[in-house]
View (cartoon, helix red, strand yellow):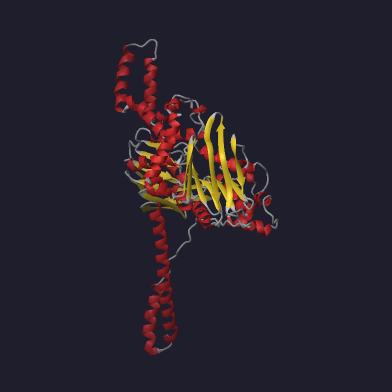
Length: 542
């Protein structure tokens, strides 16, 4: 169990939360939500002991082992993959290394034998004999193949390191599990596995995530950081969202009734206060009026970007035709002889177990990369705007946000540009911030402002929800639903795909599935399940 006593965290003049006293109990999963900068990750770092609070205390039940999803992807570069996972149980890892060092001594003596016996007993008590097999099982479930288990961490790709560090946090049944954005860089199948793991996990979990379906699936409680306070709610994210809106509506309705009653009393007092026969009643009503008060309803500190995509050029029926596309990168086949057509108004979700596959396909469709074979033919009326997954190359300059956006705008008027920046939550002096120091979320909002200004009738979007908070994801989700143009996109956000896509294209190296369907129907349809199994079985045979 974790309790906080008058916990306060400040950075300079900024207070994240103040005098917070809450309790996190075993067997529950708490989803931490709040606007960007509210202090979600900071809360986890304070609980883990990584940083000290400004005042107040965190109390953790004696003997509880805390596991934390590490954010430094280079911290274990000199470790093997298996050792990195086992390091998640530090006591077991240290014991294992001490035991190995003892047996490796060239002058092993009787005293060493006695010590080894004690170590063996402790090692067995911590399930040390199963450590490597349990670590290997976790790695395999998270998509790290057996041949990489004895590799050095420094030799792994970034997305592979993320999965190993997640395995490290999950290893050894910790009493308290702290996860900051655990679904980042995971494909949808792995996210589904993680959801089931956490649902079955018997101990305490505190998780920060921007994935709405994930929060709905795994959370028993929501910890909402707002107005320098942390409020706990029972239920998942959707329940919190609906309940908070209901509470706000009820307060507004109660205030309306109170205002009407106050006006009625004021009118009576004004009319009869000078009337001797009514003076007693007027005084009584004045006392009633003094007791009435309007309950303060604070507007949430969360801010929703105002995203809306329009297009100038009326699109024709045929948007883009892809014929016989084949592409390999460094000897790895991504897709082969792929052909499809996209029509006006379709919203097509492209999915693959290999994220590089869809990113490469989008680069080819956009004309940024050439295929090994095949062609892409755009319709004569199609205008397209592209959201790449890696957008850092856009921001390698000393331009201000205002100057940066002006590069893509036909209207150079300051008020026009400020209007778009304001819609994306850049106000006042924000426009003068240099783009090369922007956070990931700020860069995404800049790209979205650019796409709105371009007014294309086709949007190509590669993981557009990355780095956005829940409010921005919701705003983008709704904007894409409302957009009447054509959308080609990929995302790891289940709800985003399920509410936007009317067509699914799933790609594997040796084939692809192309079907008109909502995402949930696609995943649950028995015929589609069989087709997906066959699609990936072809890869195994090769």
